[in-house]
Image 1 (cartoon, rainbow, N blue to C red):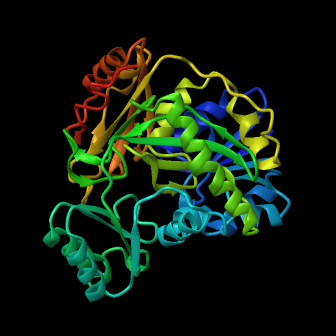
Image 2: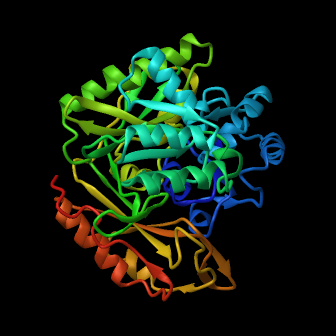
Length: 421
């Protein structure tokens, strides 16, 4: 098969690494890819946002199957356009991608389908939102309704912080159209877990669990980011909790989307909080998580590509996946300044040394400058390792990081610390 992967981040590098190993893959392209993905695929200079360019390329190169990595082209209707052109594509339609594109849409769906989630209200007026917050008190959560690259959520511990977050979105326009409406919801307490599943419109095939680390600093301090690391499995995500999440969150969501005439196909990623009353939904993503994907796929012993094809074809009913029992740790190396304005252009050396002991180095925000690899983003590298225990996986990942020479890079030092598996 001739495969086209859309995207350029660490998630896409992990997907390229997995798909290139499939005996079904005769040729793999990536649009636009990155220097790490170029080790697995032929990169073409087409932006993930260039829907017309991607469709034209897929037609011209007789692509058999397209895998869309990032959320923005999914929300923009790339899968709709590809399928209309007769090109099979993995991912939800634009209508189904509303589960990520609009937090308000998802909260309303949860209310209609009795899916457990935090109490909420939607606002477009800052004064009304502040009055609601004043009545509810803190802590409280303020979310931009639309896509904000993982940076549109504020967990406010004080009323002043909550009101500032409201002003940022509704008055100052920090998130543009994505923040023209906000969702204000109750703060839920408990461990978090990322629970992903392949969905074929009707059937749900769960993947193993993971846990993201969102805050920029050790000890979960500082602002939220797109993710500073992930581990798999998620601590405290027991078989009973998995069964409850499937029964009360994922399966009802899939059924509700089908009943609306917008069946969901692709990856449904439920960000969960494990409360005393059972798992509750924080939010949905409609693609592989980043950096969860980089922690999950190295544990997958089955061929990924047939599973993606079965999800697109509506054929997951009897599908099964085999997983490595060993836990994984994936640590993000980010550029100084992230999640604000990151330092760009710094040379990165030692990547071959870092991978020598079996760690996987997934490129997230790099580019080539002659023979050199340089930083070209906020989250720049993902260093992933497996181990017989979580502690061993951590040791291997951080040992690899110690061999990377990048003056402008930093990482959290506590990814997976204290977790057992």
